[in-house]
Amino acid sequence: MSRLMRFGLIEVRIAPEPALAMTEAARAHLLAGRSLPERAQRREMTVSLVFDKLGGSVFRGRNVAHKPLKQTPKGATIVDFPDSDEAETDSSMEERVRHLLSSSLRPGELFAIVRANLSSIEKRYIHLDLDRARDGALPEGASSALRAAVREHLASGRLPAARPSQPVRPACLDTPIKTTLVPDQILFGGGDHLARLEEVVDVARSDVFVLSTFVAAQDDEKARLGQDRVWAALERAVRRGVRVHLFFGSSLNGEGKHTRAMAELQHRLRAAGAGVATHLEPVHSHAKIVIADDGVDGARALLGSCNWLQSPFRAHELSIELRDGAVAHCLDLFGAITAAVPTARDSRDAMQAMRTALRLKPGQLLESAPTEDTIPVSLRILAASDHLPLLRRAAHDADERLVVMTHRMGSPMIQNVFDPAQLASERIATVQALYSLPSPARMSASAFQRVSSKLIRLMGSSASRR
Image 1 (tube, one colour):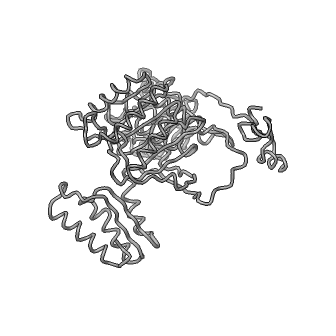
Image 2 (tube, helix red, strand yellow; image 1 turned 45 degrees about the vertical axis):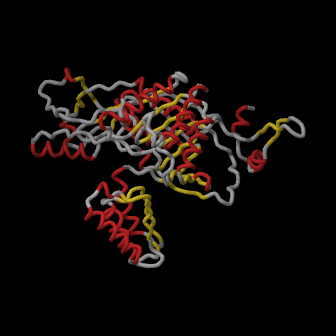
Image 3 (cartoon, helix red, strand yellow; image 1 turned 120 degrees about the vertical axis):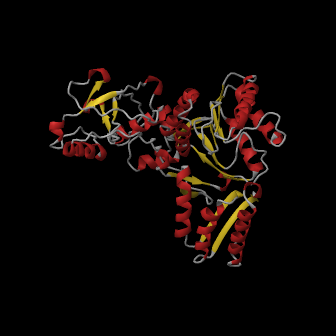
């Protein structure tokens, strides 16, 4: 009975008489001759993974011979580990496991979670038989870079060098988010952001995650009015037993200003309850994210321009709210951003638990008809290095309209925004550059004059262009 109700086949009706009744979705499902849905099952697997530092290959442990450092065979040619290398993190290892297992998933299977607290990392040497390698026999999963290095060594006799491995690119950056939006999910202006933050935090029952680039001090008068309401909402959540996880991103932490502000907030919240994890090390990201469960079996995420733990909520902020399945992508992003923070393991475990629950959540067999204002969308999360190429491509590919919106109008806007926009204005009808305020204090007078003149030329190119 529970299974049928979870899939929306049976519902409880209170009126006119209390009863269990078949839903319209169930009637349509059964009339179509389809079988009843099965329960979702979770299986735990032990995975032995070998990551090759020379060619970046990812092997299953059983497919490659590997030796402890002290047991290398006599006469073996050894390629040593790189001198300066990126430290592996829970997140980077999870991405490697995901890569390894992705090709072996069966239809309907879903990679859920890596239990990082049960994993261990050990340096070993991979043992390759060069006689067999001459004939192209390398372990299954060998990368093209490893094959090329072996061929070069066999041809020249020179020993290849292992290069520092590149950070693993989070899969969420290359996976489109397919979802729908209604106007209520677009937040504009400080008042909208503050009200939605309070709403999201007040319905949470398990976890609230916040990443804000900056953190306001308790005595910061500029932010005090709005932040009093933020702090009060977080205090209410802690008193209900909700776990609150707070991060900040800025590396511009002169004299530890934001670290001290976070410590002050931690002291204030812990007076309300024990479920507080405030992380005092910056994550070096300008992402602004709030994620929380929705009090039932879903979740909500807020992504955009608002510095949640510092804003006075008076600026022209713009954010988007995502719900349920789309939030899993945001949790992937949050986990990747915070992976290198040594204190964040418990918080990341909570993120993974929420993400897994969202991905395994049974959906309705028949989706309800979309409302008139529902818009299907495909969204992408951008890394910092992806922004400028995308902006220039947008200026090149736009057919009718190009709109660029920024908070501060500074000198980098000339080549990064206005030059592409001016080229676009020569062939399309509408080019708009919207901003909150100029920042002459951050640039020379001549640079500010160039920004102003470039903007005036854009505005004057046509009556419909601003």
